[in-house]
Amino acid sequence: MATLLLDRNANPDRKDRYGDTPLLKAIQNGELRIVQALLDAGAGIDTTDGNGNTPLMLAIRSGHTAIARYLVKARAELNGKNRKGWTALDLARNSGDKELEQLLLMHGAVTARKEPVARINIADRVRQRTPGDDSVDAVSPGPILVEAAWRGQEDVVNALLEDGVPDVMVRWSG
Image (tube, rainbow, N blue to C red; front, side, top):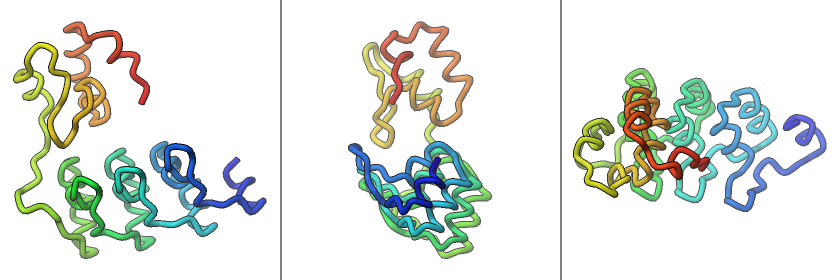
């Protein structure tokens, strides 16, 4: 569908009502082939979402390593900062992907942070939370269940579900 629209001269940088471009959506969905087609059609490789995340940052955050590698090789901006002041390297370090971290460093990526980026341990945060506290931390302010799922921490998701997570958190579809 994307290639059909591009063949009919659709604007590859048109933003939806949330400020996302087709490139950002393709990255979030892990669609490398569509990412390639959009970039070939002239989509902005360094466009940002509403939080200042570049396509490279979104690929890293979403765990789509192949797309992140492709974007690095396509000369995506490595050292831009999102609204929280994080660079692509900061996000790669936070994800724990050492290979991606090394790739970024080899291409000249730098960190914007003065303190080391620590990988967030959601299990520790779950043990520390108080009743009614469903946040993770200042870096990841979303519900713990959503954050654990997003980070691929299946053991934490299962523990939260077994512990009786409120229905609103299970049905969340953001």
